[in-house]
Image (cartoon, rainbow, N blue to C red; front, top):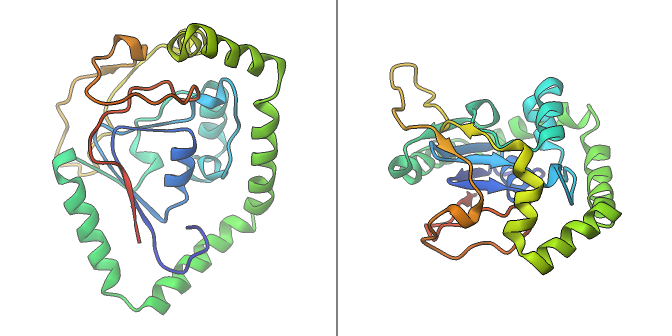
Length: 221
């Protein structure tokens, strides 16, 4: 997605964690619903940044904070735009139509020059190192204990042990328009066993989050 000459739009809603966040942030534009939570819980155990896009999108100060804590992000700073869920698909389609009205060569040139700025800062070496460290972090003694807990006591127990010290309350991603405000209440992050399931849950111990059976987030070419 990073190197393809066509612009790529990531359409995100709900929990977008782990490798899903790496994938979404490699897109050229990220448009999310207000309920989106983007995070890397593997920062606490069993993983490492893969694409490096968190670092380049957030900058050093914030990247260090989220890398060391694994907290989910509900801030429009990481993305391009946030809209109500029922407007998300239409917003992405409208943005894609705008881009499609421009010459493909013009879009490719602008994408290349912006990407080059990041690559000159060492993006390639960061993306080479990330997967190596990700593999190493899955094979440490602490990682082995984490997997053993997930296998014997369940994923919820393993993630509760991992995430317990970081239990927090986050607000939905704010609207980007200064004339409109969201009135959605705060959302408390809870153990997945305490959440009423309306769909199948993910068995990935890196996320441990309830995966709702709504239409999936998607990538638009």
